[in-house]
Amino acid sequence: MLNFASAKNPGGGFLGGSQAQEESLARSSALYGSLNLFHTEFYETHRNQKDAFYSDRMIYSPGCPVFRDDAGAFLDASYQVDFLTSPAPNAGAIQKHRPLMVAEIPGVLQARMDKVLALFASKGCATLVLGAWGCGVFCNCPQMVAASFAEFLKPGGPYHGRFRQVRFSVLDTANGLPIYGAFAEYFGSAKDLKFQN
Image (cartoon, rainbow, N blue to C red; front, side, top):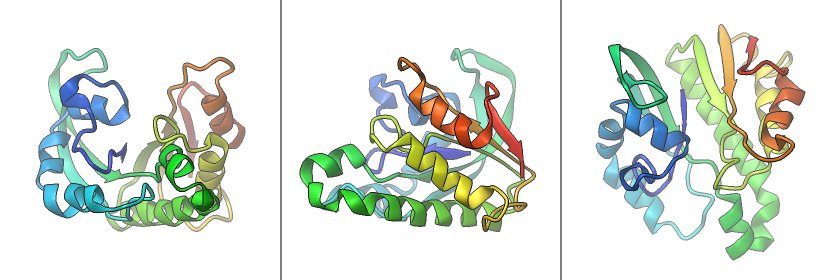
């Protein structure tokens, strides 16, 4: 499962009660403890970086127990998930502080996405759970993110056939469902977007 990471804080803002994908994962599993093991080489590195593109550094957390459901209740039995933590470029911050570099976002995102999928493949992951990576608080264009995943995963892409199943879990509460719509355009319109690879 891809964790849409905060580049600077393990678990994002979950300790302060923030509600987003990474925070939900941190509350429901042992992911937070795993992320804290990489405080210096991942989080301090990104804090010291002077731009919001961040880096291609990733944290692979195999076999993390998941022990809560979506409502926060403890499960009768935990199950294990391999998490891959990687930050998307923060398009909103780049637009605000380095507007001349906005045109570089798609290339950086695609290069990082390639590395994320390559790491999943190298670890032998059969089923992936992906989503609207960087389309929330980081303000990346959902159309660009969905199109990039499609380029890598659909027929003709370098990762087509590398995974048994790929799911796109997309939460969208905006009028007109623009994030969901972008992913549905490329991957179908089921409630949980999924396809057999």
